Image (cartoon, rainbow, N blue to C red; front, side, top):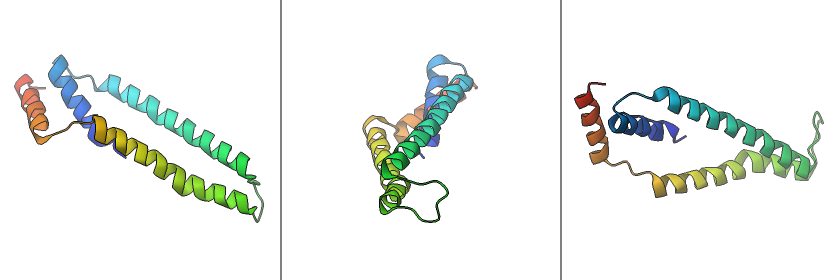
Amino acid sequence: MLYPVVFSQVIDESIVNYEQRREGIYNGVLNFFKNFGKLLQALTLAIVHELTGFVEGASTQPPLALIGIRLHMGLIPAILMAIGLLVFWKYFELTPEKAKQYKEGIIKLKL
């Protein structure tokens, strides 16, 4: 959810620091991590369903499997989002002054 904000600052900072546009490189890295996230999602789903006794195609599920579904739909994403927000809060330093500085640098470079 946070990548558009972070990604735009990374692109702007890169343009100012290297004096050239390098979005292709950053898009490649972004796509790698998006696909890695999909892999983690699939692994998490498989592990949770395996540990909770989920029965594919069954008309009813055991109570533990229902808890596993709820965990996968609510608690696990909430925990991962909280971790992401803490990392974002700790390491992301976008201020209006920095944003203005990057925009002025881009205009100055005519890029």
